[in-house]
Length: 500
Image (tube, rainbow, N blue to C red; front, side, top):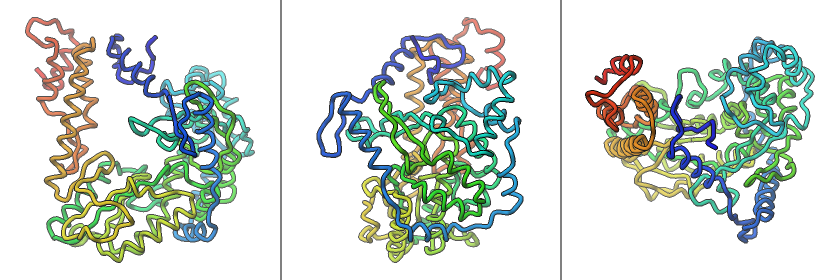
């Protein structure tokens, strides 16, 4: 039986052997056949694998924080939230807010432990809307969130092709739909405030800012250093298990430092305190594990809460480092971030101990850990590779947000576009085994637009597949050979796209 939510299946496309093979590959990739426990022993039984992962999670969530470092980070992030905003956050939840939050949920998402999917709420909205509205206000205004409502089920997705330890898996938490609706309502209320609260170089979730602005800033810094021969070290940090290593104690203190009222912080606390999760491995579910840290991946609030938690680190770096100035009148740029992807522009060797102190303080305050093995440094301009850089190795090229950067813009552009064209060719080959119409082929080409960007191209978000790429996909299997029947809808779409 083919999954209804087949990710590579276009609307109206009939299932083919291609989709069945893709489904089997996913199922095979999800199976955990062996894992190495904390003592270094390989566990191959279901019981042994489950015990190894459960012990790993329990240890991860029992790390204490340094109170002094928490205070230091809170002072760096201190803000004064306007009274009007505080009043907005504390208002009772309206039915309109519930309905908007419900409509934003994606289709065919896996439900939480109560097995009630979003589709149930949408299909029965007219009948249950008053009850759902009352339940949301009970959760928010009265802080009545039951243990079952905030219980999650963790599924383990491999980070690499050959995972060997529990740390090599990314834990995604499946949460109950009512919990996620509440989390989405709170996130929507916070959305207008993000630009004022977050560091100006935190590009995730800020209106008008995207991943492309992050990459463009890195590209411009490299170009500036290349042209002027200013010494520059581009330091790309990898924070190990970034979302899972946010202490709840730290989270609540940071929220108060931003000026959020005790009333509002208590509403966040009731959704996170005494939360539990079970681990699902190969279809088996463990008992509940207490979660004392983590902004759970799978929660609609997680992205924003993490950005607020890492914000003090960005501000400390911005205050203490000289950074690089891009253009004659531009303000200095010290750091850019897209959620947990943090890139620091180091311009003098004296920056290194300052960065080290700031990161250590953040680690002690949150329980986070810098992964020096995966963090990378790129020497640009006149930067000497003999300079110490937090035990992070220098590389001829580094990847930031999936895009390859080198010490010159030309090298960066060539490396990135080689990767893009390779992906386009691979996707084009997939179409050969699929039974899709001409209009579906055109939509397939349009869907591949998000791959066509690179750090060496100005206005990267305006780059689209070339005519040759469209020709390559659309003309497969004689779909547009003279004499082939094309219905009026397909012909109109072809004319609109300029493909005939």
